[in-house]
Image (cartoon, rainbow, N blue to C red; front, side, top):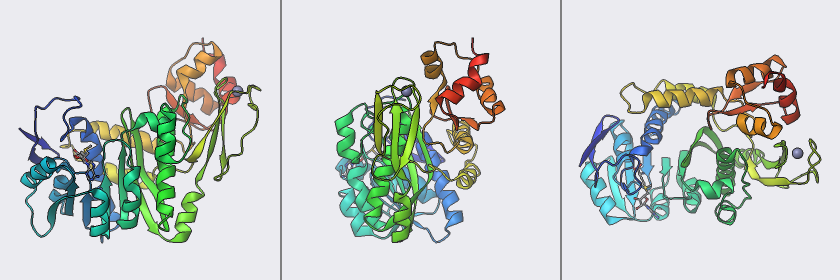
Length: 371
Ligand SMILES: C[S@@+](CC[C@H](N)C(=O)[O-])C[C@H]1O[C@@H](n2cnc3c(N)ncnc32)[C@H](O)[C@@H]1O
Ligand SMILES: [Zn+2]
């Protein structure tokens, strides 16, 4: 059957079953991810006009490569699956600028190096492909990770194996996933003397997406590693603190409640997860004709407004732990600001927020207006 997305039309197998997992070759639920990628590629080319080659390393139907080619990128698509390759060849007219290769992404990345932009969109963890991407990409590595349970610590051993870090299952699980993924990617890049700077990162219920700008310098790799550290989290009162460095520096008891149920996660990425100026540029590249234009605009503005704090709170969980009813988020955040703290909504959910206040300070600032 034919589908149209972002102004390009292509063949995909099967029925257009919105949200159904067996739509292997073309997942309509990832349209926002692709729309954002195309807008980001446009914005990135303004920033780095030399960039011209794009490797869609796990192409399936060829949709990402096709959309990038329609924007003038010189595109290489790759997939191990013969049926996917045949379909991508049907969808992309191969010419001097566009090729579809049947092969393993790791081998193709090395063979095609250097490539300006590499996009990793595998099933599950991207880590088996990270080294080849950082060894081969010049400007940008775009990564989707769909293994949210290992990333957030719900499947602890699997997360430790994939990310060489300890994720912990907290109420800010999606952000734990973001920061575990960024940490592992920064460490992979550092092996090649490459520093990463996340210019767009967001989490949705079933995946994490990040776009990393690369700097090919040992000092940039060192600087990226300096963004790593640990999160100490109290399961009793939801207090958390962070420590910088690859060695964890955790107290024995919770500084807030004296409890001993402390979780230590890391190394995680503690630095900024996006570049606000770039987000604005991306926003300017989203035409109304994109299928997810309004959702994307909302997401980009939420990301731009979010504080840089490395963890967020869930207002309902906090209020529940205090035995108090929650109030409207705007009022709650207003109380924090009135008490002199910074506070912002966070894109992780309707009751997610960030603040530079700690749990005791949040309670003191907001409790008088709860219940
Ligand atoms: C999630 S799908 C890609 C979806 C596609 N990028 C899109 O936006 O619609 C993952 C694809 O990776 C392919 N794949 C799995 N292992 C691979 C490998 N080692 N090298 C290249 N492709 C691989 C699969 O055949 C599958 O087509
Ligand atoms: Zn505590």
